Image (cartoon, rainbow, N blue to C red; front, side, top):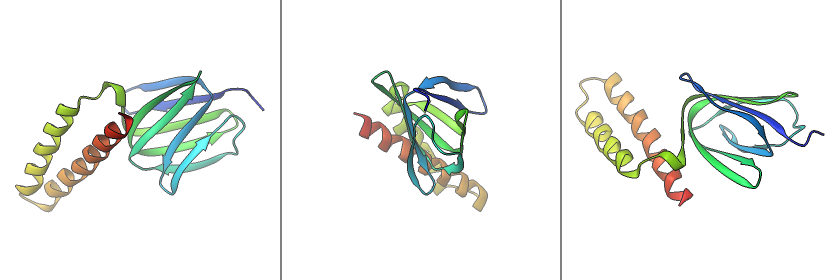
Length: 135
């Protein structure tokens, strides 16, 4: 069994993380799962939440909004729709964005606009809750 796990986190904008880690805990659609070196191969969709990256006795928490996780003999790759390191998020900015999304949902001219605003609300509320848990 290898001592380290190769982990790659990719969003549409960039490769967010690539390196060897001790373990990654992922918010799978069927529940959280941990991946260690030598894990059996599988694929899973991921739900909105946080990834906990354990490396050298430090845990980095990264917010993810949807995507897929694939475990192979080479490591773990996550393709996420959106990511943000929790330590870099601004609580006031999240609150302002959440207020704006609630107004967009309330004032939506059609179903599509309302559904888009409601999806943004769910994402921002999950982000806000993850930030609160991290502190």
